[in-house]
Every structure is written in structure tokens, then in C-alpha cells.
View 1: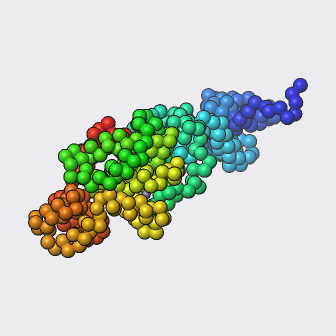
View 2: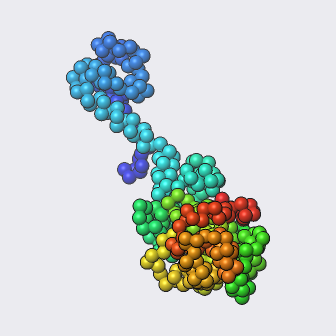
View 3: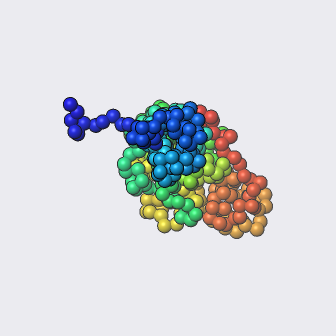
Length: 371
Ligand SMILES: [Zn+2]
């Protein structure tokens, strides 16, 4: 005997079952219905077995034959089709998971970048989650966690910016975990910071400074930003070790030194806060926290910004070789970087320094570029 509360195996009753019941109650055979409606016996048989969808014409004929409304047959069929879809749980779960993940990460873009490893299926997406979050689901605090980072205040959906930035950070952590670095040496990093300006003028300075960072126990790599994140750089700890990531959102040498100096300040001065990441947008520096102001101030000192502004304040109209020479000699910072700083502080217009523009990505050895 079946217990009342035992779940019954699901049977999706379709219009075909009702047709058969009606035929039985009228004492008709399939052939009779065929003769009355003008439909073929084959067609009636398919309808009874729910193997053929009911068209408007068929619904009308069934209504006339059984003295019911045509709508009744259309509704029965529609409900039957819908239930068939609902019972397709794997596909439903896949669509649901995909929609859920799309709210916190640009799946298409990440796939294109090669950041997603698995195929487009429910199992694949579950593995991606395990890879990124170390759990099969998006962490419950995902959207509400506070993050130390600053977003452009106009024309963006802040919710996307935060979630996508966080996903970017999770992905960056998976890359950091694959990198071996010696233990952190704060004294050595302090001395590197004080000498940072010297690297800007050195031959292969970008490559050399990355090597120097590693020798201080600071990991460095490039990871491009994701749509709507507006990230320039980040600093965070992975397994107790500090990492600096550069996005190269602007592929310019001055931007590289500027971002590097900023993140370096976070590592040196804010190590105790690095467990939660610093994810920086360095374009918009209004309404900053004290900690960000502090990082900006240290970054400025490492790149001799005060001297650059002092010498550069009158330079605007007269970008003569002699003045440019003076700027570089006096500040000991390479010309593209010094000019970039003057543009940042609006003492020069970017168009004036176009010819000094230098790319940075071609100066970073490929082993440091993670995606
Ligand atoms: Zn910062």
C-alpha cells in the first residue's frame, strides 16, 4: 500500500489523456473521431499519445466534436508543454546558474580572455566557481562586502563595478597562488621605494624594477581589467605574501610608474590592511579615505612629484628641448613619466605630450603577463 505522504512519480497529464477519456465515456473509437473531424486516424493517434502539439485548427475541431471550447484544448496543451519544460531540471539549473554568475562576472569576456577553463555546462560552471571562490556557489557576502577601492562616480552601475572588480580580484588570487616568491623584506622594499625614480631612467627599467620587487618578496604581475571595473592596479596578500597587480588599462609608461608607486605604498605602509584588497582606480581621486591620501602622498614622494610640479609649473607654453632637458636632469625622473605627472596635475594638456608617449606592455617580459 502506498503511504499518503509518499511522493508519487510525476506523470504529466496531457490533452491526449483527456481525449482518450472523452472517447471512452462517449463509447467512440479513434476511427469515429477521425470520421467526425476529418483528421486522419494517424493524427488522432498522435494526439492521444501527446506526440503532436494541438494547433488552433485542431483545437477548434475537438471543441466542435466534444461540445467544449477550443480554448480548453489549447490551454491543456500549453500547460502540458510548459510542464515538459519544467521537468527538464538540468537545463533549468544551468540557465539559473548562468544568470546568477552573470550578475557578478562578465562570463563572455572572461571566456574570451581564456580565464574560464571549463565547458559551457552546469558541471563546467560549478568547477569555475570552485576554482574562483573555493566553493561551488558565489560567496553569500559577495555584493555587500565593503572593499577599499574607488570607482568612477558617473555613468556606471556601481553594483556591477563592485561585483566585477571583486571577481577580478578572485581571479587575480588564483594567478598569485601559482607564483613563487621569497619571504617579504620590508627594509629592502623601503629602499627600493626611495630609489624608485632611478628606475624610470634606467635601461630596461621596467623589467629591472619588477625583478627588484621580487627580490624584496613582493609578487608582481599584469592582469587586464574587466569591463566596468575601471581598475588600474591592486595590492593584496595571498597566503601571507604581498602582491601588486597592474592592469595596463592605459598602456602608458607614466601610468605604469604612477600605479606602481601607489601600490608599493600600500604594501609598505598598509601591510596590516592588505588581507582585504586595495583595488584602485587612479583617475578619480575626489573624496578619498585617509589611507588612500596617504598612499598618494608616498607615491608622489617616490616619483619626486613635488620637484616635477615646481619645475613644470611654467613649462606649459614652452616645451623647448632645453626646458625638457632641465626637467629630466633636475628631477631625475624620465621625461615621459615627468610629463605624464604634469598632465595628471593639469599643468599640461595631454595633446602637448603626445610625441613623448611610450607604451609599457612591450617593456614587461611575457612571463609576468597573466591575462
Ligand atoms: Zn589605493
